[in-house]
Length: 297
Image (cartoon, rainbow, N blue to C red):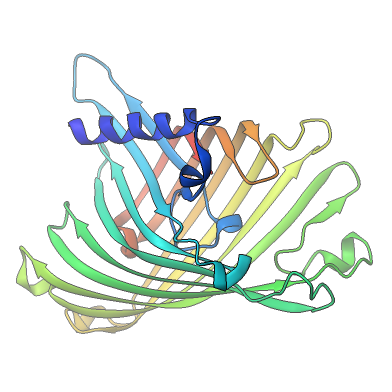
């Protein structure tokens, strides 16, 4: 099991390089996944249990992207090649998935158009996926849309239901939520079980809520997130009998950030609860609770 150890060491080395990073290293982004935009994605997470008298346990959820930095596209578009790795061991249904591809985030709102009441974040990616547990290799294409409202400036209640607008209830709590909707195509090109080969088209939707209690007192270092995702199989060429099958997942996190900057850098500890399934990343139906080190830049 040298691969998980090397990935953890690499992540820690990237975290430690600050002064010497320079412009080249600033083009790297680290987070859990590139299926959501930069400000709405979860941080990468790592945990290791080395009991000594039994098999070690690893939990790795990480993605690393290099921004190509096309100057002509301005600040609204981030695009670049990326890799993702998901590993969960010593659980009832292990997860071991590697993905590599190209992803793009597009913010449709112009920086000068502050009066624009509605805009959107569009996320698109295409990638190769190797699921070591199911022994399948596939190609995925995903397009995701997130609506973004503008602050109406009418107080907490007027902003509460507006997506991707931070609402403050005095000094007690900050609240925001982010809905999304999209389509995904996955074509399994090789499988140990030939019955798994074929293509599936999925309708993908979800909502993520974020709460920051007592933001001034705790310097926004305590954060609570709740996320619900629903995936619906529109077409399944490999298993037609599974058509119309829904896949649900609920995730809840309690994060304590030791480092939190205005640029979006996060580092700290997270208590994570996951219940459900996600065919996109090879997470099969089960419940998992874990304490992890989380990092995002």
